[in-house]
Image (cartoon, rainbow over all chains, first blue to last red; front, side, top):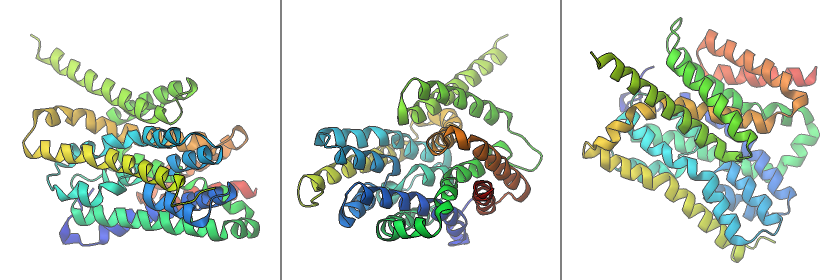
Length: 242
Length: 110
């Protein structure tokens, strides 16, 4: 894959940003509709999307607040759900050898699951790229929330099957991203990645069935990556041994 | 119920501040550590290489888990297969998403 650079201008931003835009619109529209349905005002709904900007935790906050949960529980739940984001910045830095201190300050606020998944595929990326992709994704999130809060009911009434089709946008985005790792070039399979993915799937199922909820995502990913690293280290030691 | 200038506003602001800190502070630390050629960060490298695809896989499973009740599981499987086929054939993220979403929609209408 070609690394995005300033020489390429905005092209990589559009190439990676448009699928994110398409993926975020329905998800944020769903949030806008759900929050209005739960009795939130349009401004309250928009404030959650504009300030928190993290899908799952927004849904959780809305349902907790609507269910009159204590305020401290609302806040801590959002923090716990978004804890997985803590690994994304260091992962990008190590993978892309980033050294620009402005990157986290200017773009870190928008480092969501999908923005990370899209940008981590590149061997190196710039402030222009990160900033551009972050802005495209954020504008889709805000636009979708506003549209969902304002016209969600009308859209689903006119085209009822659209709601169901839109639920598959994010899974399709993740499948397309994973494919680039599984088969980095036509005909070349990355067996190590396949093993990591199989292990992640197993760990995720175990964690989810154990009732760990959204914590299953970071736990399964860290478990599989840890096992892969330990396995590679042991193999290296065995090769070195006389 | 949700006065932005009252309790709800404070909850949203505190939740947002925590989320911001979770995203920005570890990244800032990592960039500083990288600038100092930190050994801790170079040791993290193989872990990070495996972590990136693993977290995307976990996010995929999470999105499917919450989006697909048992009665639509076959539709998710078929649309996933169509998305994989499109990714393999066209190697374009945008085309794969359109094919995946389109096939999911068609299967819903059938």
